[in-house]
Amino acid sequence: MNPHFPEIKKNFGFGMMRLPMCGEEVDTEQTSKMVDAFLAAGFNYFDTAHPYIQGKSEEAVKTCLSSRYPRESFVLADKLSGGFEKEEEIRPLIDLMLDKCGVEYFDFFLMHAMSATRFEKYRDAHAMEIALEYKAAGKLRHVGMSFHDTAEVLDRILTAWPEIEFVQLQFNYLDYESPTVQSRLCYEVCRKHGKPVMVMEPVRGGALVNLPQEALELLPDGSPASYALRFAAGFPLIAMVLSGMSDEAQMADNLATMGDFKPLTEEEQERIVKVRTLYQAQHKVPCTACGYCVDGCPVGIPIPDIFALLNKKLAKEEFDENAYAALPVQADACVGCGQCENACPQKLQIRKLLEEAHKALA
Image (cartoon, rainbow, N blue to C red; front, side):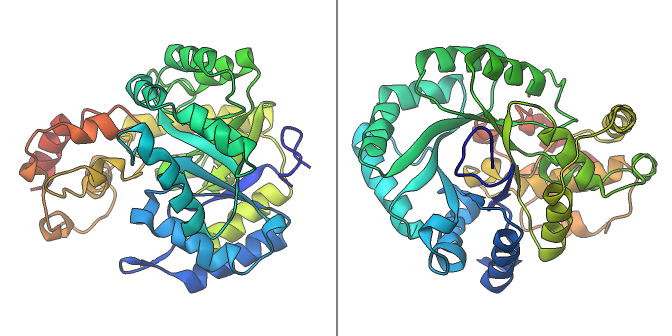
């Protein structure tokens, strides 16, 4: 049983942001098999959000989970994302999310991707007050937030919103001492306020799985993903580690790691430091492929795909030299509006990076 939230059976969750796809649609057959395997292994925490996969993640929750299993058999988290402009739009949005997921309540409900500017929008729209209203009505069980900003901003928000019960942080060994993500510093702020932590991006959007060969040789006794998950789950305040699994093989590997969880040894921690150094030396763009930048791009530039190609070239990995030319929109189509940078959780200078990517790949 989870020491922070008794309804959660174990400390590992199924993040439904990167589900298996058949073209533009979720592969519901494979997703259902993954849901079955996850529950059969004794886990029960599922995490979605209204914008994930252009709204198809919530639909997959209904198709693959809530319509197939009793409500008490799983724990579901959803998020109030930026799909509202004023207070009057929040209640209909929450009702829509409940309907799309096919449930009458959410166990965990998050103010999504909080930052200094986003917090002001939510505060002015009385989002917390509305969430607490839904909690009093039994439609939300726990209210928290996911967060992408500095530790100082996190401290301010937790002081302003003492009702927050938990915080979801980007937390992995690559970002642990990052000056922009500030994983360790944000974790310390949560400890100061006594807030349990849910972990997102433990494998950094797959980056800590697709490691350079030199780094892989430092991790001989398990998959790269297993080391990343064990690092994230090894801290006392961590209530949950989420993994956005995209196929049954990833599910099997993660279940094997977290079903018999063991924290990293001191020797393994030392290996992780060496892996981090090697990775940082070979990868220029720390993109997690979350896709938030793409949703607001007025010309539809596939920014994560371009950065993935650039990183492969910089790391001197094999890749299709024609892949960039085959993209429907290339980096030089950027109009410089900056919407992508406002949406980026990693605070990347995307416009500048797109210029560099086009020069390197075109």
